[in-house]
Length: 314
Image (cartoon, rainbow, N blue to C red):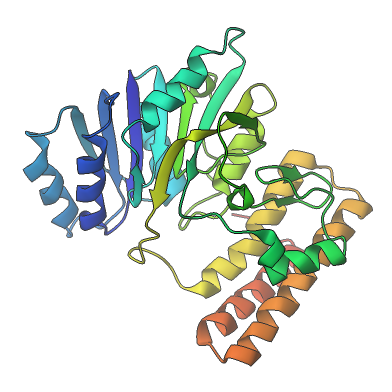
């Protein structure tokens, strides 16, 4: 039995597309739990789900719960009854054999060490050889690893999994995106949940959960479990808030997973963050885009918040 858990916020069209997409799986989920963070006064998503429920080949549960994607996913996980819990975003579209390919990986796990399988987003890959940002990371030796899906435990930075070229089979990773991952139920039965620190718009809560799970379980990416991500613009926040979280949330994860942090850890972390300030600031000047300026301001606020010790006080 597979329970699909999907948080959503003002995305009725995306939810309708997801439910239709899940209906075409060769291995159908037993239930889909949609956790809607929209205000009670907004009924569009609820009405969309209600109009589709009777024709779906699986049980569909609609729940209202706010707090952000991490909190919403916790609510869905608490309600899930399946042997496997699939965390699927509302703007992700799975190929028809996605669940079949994912569960076949679990089926080969004779030692019962595998905790999660993440899929491969076919429309997100980029070649770091042609990405100027990543060329500079290598030249300046900003990171100690460049393997996609790994976590740099000395710098506090997750290596973008989208740099992984198409492949077949499985490869071990340190973290899994919440866009298209299937987890063994026992991982959550042990009490593991998304940290309530990650409220509001989610940044890095998936890496944090994965890194905590990885202390006991093995995590892999399946190159044959294909999907695509639509990157819906609906329900997102401004770049200023994202910039803030790209400093504060990254430091929180680094401190919680690797801590206590040494001076070497902190020096490497702030060196990387300093380069990001320069990169975003240069982009704001060169492109004259207000979104870049907003992100720069958010990052500066994040710097100041961590330095003052107020970032984690709530």
